[in-house]
Image (cartoon, rainbow, N blue to C red; front, side, top):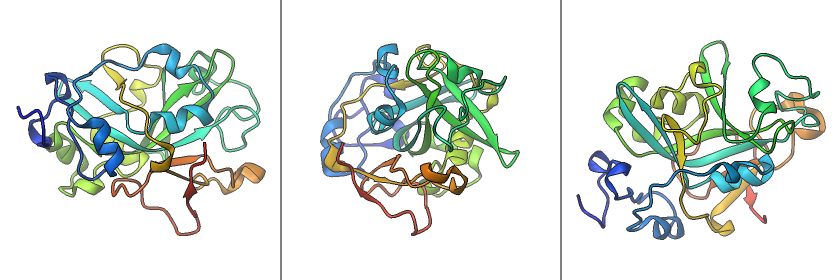
Length: 244
């Protein structure tokens, strides 16, 4: 396998060479060039508020191992949901339900729910116990096992494989069965990668939460600038530079 350059189809992240994306910005590309580290993000990383965790997850790699194979993608878009006061969050009001109970534990676990009764959405539980916050992973840049992802999604268009929360779950085979999974174990996890410069991140209001009242316009959607793999959203969601 080539150590420099990039071949998606022959770039399993576990073979020691991380796949360099030519579609990410120049600074992000430099971060990945020649990197061999394949360590998972540790528990401590997740024990921060969702507003801090959401941009920190950008550029890291989501991996899912199944009987069909290993699929993965670079996280390029996230949204923060910041707990009981956030009227856009499933934990709004602070009363756990059987579905949301995992959000009330410590960070670093998966919270997966359905929208429209058919599409799974994968979230990373954030913060410490009894601080029910989460980060929705909205889009990935596909990396490993593209043919399996295309088969699952029924499309050959690379940019369309993971450009939305339901799409990425379909491509990686993530369902509600993974809700509650420990992201520090070996089936569903996130690989650590260097933090992106703030200059390479944009923000906007979160998508389709008009019901969230005063929380509707919070700039809690974070995404990699100039990535063609982010989800397609209406023009009303105006983006701005991330100031940190």
